[in-house]
Length: 436
Image 1 (cartoon, rainbow, N blue to C red):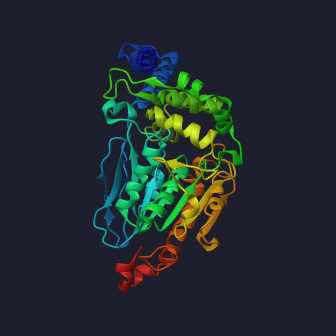
Image 2: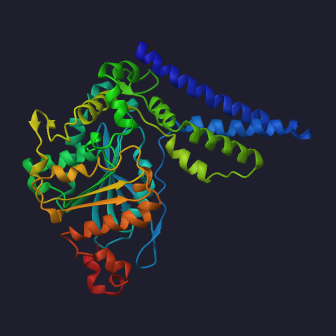
């Protein structure tokens, strides 16, 4: 009950702050106060508006809100989400593009289960949709999963990825972003031994901790500085009676959010102070830069306790993937068995979460893969977020990833995206059925 009381206390604090913000905003908006203009009331109202919005977002699962895009024929393409594989802990989501008949690269985007929803990759999805037939892993909030559904640790996560790859088939190109990179590599190696025909065509690993000790960061230092007992004592709580997952042990999203913010407290403090000033002056708007970022950043989800603890213990402390000593259901997974799947790694020079050196370690583990099936890219000046969703991704990394996919695509001619960019593919009707 102590763990459950802690969970409910955090929710009570969040709920109280949301109420205080709404109350302050309502009070400052009272019509009678307009008779005597008072700058202090404007500041109170602005503080209330920002506070209420901030704390209300923490318990919301964001919508995808994928905008339409213009197809090659000049018509709008409407995008809808469709669940193609359901699961207790996560679904496989397909982005259906209305009216598109051309064959596109089949891409599985593996989203992190690290505190935020898969919608954190919304901008990544939007950038890939015009060129790809896109699927994504949509992990569920652990607080909403009944205890009767059982556990979900890193082995269960790996086997779930195996199921997704089998479902999508061998012509799939997998892109894993951040936290799932080592487990996606392990899932590919698992298929290489158990079901070689189901292996994807290519695997792109972006900013993932394949070998966390290759380049230490605050994240890796924290993992080594605490014991598993301390983590379980201070990070794990039980879901309260308000949710379907009552009694389930989790690493709460609110606690994770406090950890995220504590890494750069001054940056976040300045951002919110500036936003309150803009609201008070009437310069803020619904979709300004601050709201666009924090509306997503503040939406957090609980993580199954066994997944969090096994990740810290086996990926960061023991380095099982880095040592090629990872096991699933008692069977050792040999990364060296990957011999046909092309592997590419992407890193950013200013990534302070998965620093350069951690992800590229995957290539050395693929001892059975020819060098011409390996590729790597180090993006100068890019931080962690930038390598999969920022300017660096859009302008530099995304084109490289699509070219890498094309070079290992069995359904379409190599280098198709380059031809399309030059306008050649759209001008040749005969190539329409072969379009990537």
